[in-house]
Length: 438
Image 1 (tube, one colour):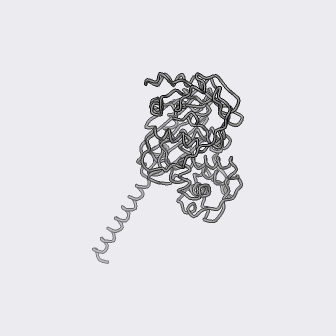
Image 2 (cartoon, rainbow, N blue to C red):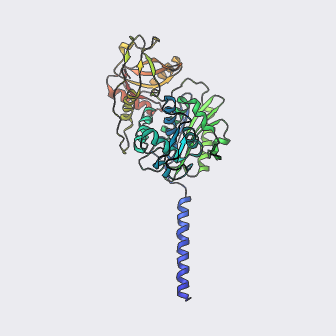
Image 3 (tube, rainbow, N blue to C red):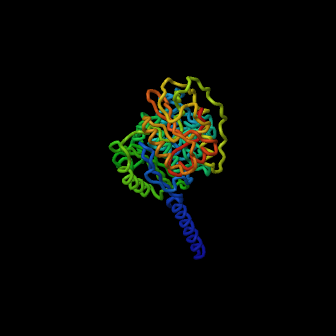
């Protein structure tokens, strides 16, 4: 073999090796994503720490938290059963790992899907469940985004059930905290599953990788996520001696640095958190997955028919957050099965007849005194000229529990209500603009 040929072959091998190493370095390099965190007292709604909390980022597998929320909702509504067998869709079988490798046409149970999404972050289970609930990936993504709006997640847009890369699938640290809180609040029994470290799937032991949860005292969930575009994401929840905190970190450079950052944030936040549980519902919107009975003080008993609002179209552009607050209220009314009055009048600062058409709701608590306290504190943070506004509370029956909505009424028009809500959000209050009928 001539020297020229040998040198050519050697050069080819060097080029191939360099190319292979370059590919490996791309796969292993730290994710280039924007960093954000948001830490909230789950008992009071107080923001304990925040950085870039409203900047858009990709959720990655945190998306499965919403898929699980909607699965739990379907279970409670009787549309699913835990032992129900579902055929794996073509779309679900074709997704890339992480997965449980159920082939197209084979069946899996709802329980296997839930465990698989929580412990393994199985993409095939998420996509298969989404296709079953929505009929298609696109339709289920619309359902997910609509549910996000109902939960007060004003900037999140979903495009699939698993969190696999999509340019227009976006969220924020604040929105993900709201979703984590909603899972705890609306499905407390099912939420306990997020503490699972492993489960058995058809003879194999499947282990999870939420490593921080396994070693951080008081942490009981909830979900990790990663893609190149998102970076290393984490939503965590801690219950330590009655101090309940929800934390979100987005855009970590590595899993280890993300976990270390979350631990450091929680170490500072947990001692600051309250032990009282005044606020059972910390987003301003009502829990629309259930039927509520509503009583305005001194109001006549009447049944209100559900409003008819079309499913919104979700553009890929960034939505205006104030406009979305109004859309949230409309979607809530559309999805309520029934709203009816109950004979439980309570004292309020204004009578039902003095209420304005447009109102701002900041919370719903299990104590009327707590609702009044929240309103008093919030009023001091509204700097604008709102001389005519007044606090207003109303009892809301949720199963056997009674919540008290905390609202401001007396706004001259929609514009002034929106302006007040903007001021409150700037002070880290949750709020939503609603009509007095909502």
